[in-house]
Figure 1 (tube, rainbow, N blue to C red):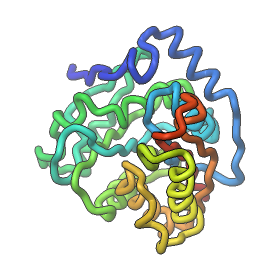
Figure 2: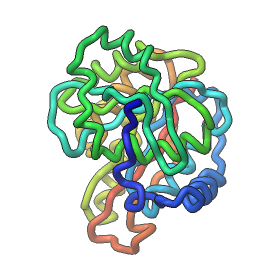
Figure 3: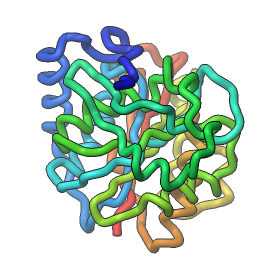
Length: 258
């Protein structure tokens, strides 16, 4: 059995299972309700100390909703490559246990194309890993479709979401927002993301400086075709945790709803 081991446990989030479980449960406890059926989310992927509050709020919108599969899409931070990769793992491990990969469904999409199973982009990548403990505590058992993308068009992400869609399937786009501006500037820049995602302001898309922007763009294209609306569940910057306002990262939590 091939297992993708955690790379940032003890760094982005606690490595001790009990501490991690308690922390995630507290973060999920600040419940936010949205009108309609949640189809997908955009969630941040920083250390829990910084983005955990926003992540907990957005994940609370789908807690206990009975999703059986999760399409988890995140950008590659360390490996430059063309296209997307599902990896070639049977499971992803966190301190809370194993999350099994839906290899049968993935093979239906990849049709034996080995370049779509590259492992390297996954090995040190945190953008998927940090989302998993929230999903484990919010959903319990589920099958994972892990997608790391490099240089790719938004239409390719949309194609992935279309292929795997289903009533019991949730999609998650992993992304932080602007990076390393002062807090006032960051909030102004991140407003571009809010208005683009939730109100369809295409004129503001270029001004959205999210690190997972291509994934968000694919989700926005997909959601619009399906008639889903998007709402901003929570927004914060790292300044709220660190007190440092000269160089911050923005965190947005969004839900796509039918």
